[in-house]
Image 1 (cartoon, rainbow, N blue to C red):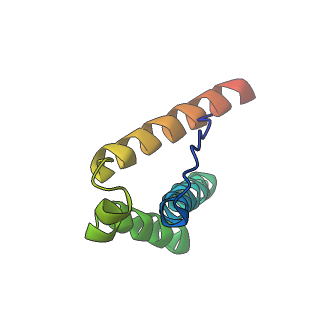
Image 2: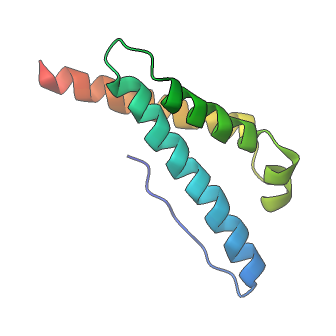
Length: 95
């Protein structure tokens, strides 16, 4: 599991921006995991939350919050890779 390293700044606005981005990543993970746990059924609510988070990661607002230092597309790919690996490992351990 990915460990979140948070570096706090003296600037409260930077801290708020960082918190918004981290919460969006947590929300994405929660929603994506819910799509996996649907076990063959389509979870419209979970996929909607995934889509909303991914839209945020691709947005101008995200680029503003991250000072254009984080590529939202790469972040989505990394989150998906980590969660898919986690899911695969979890499924293998059930066997």
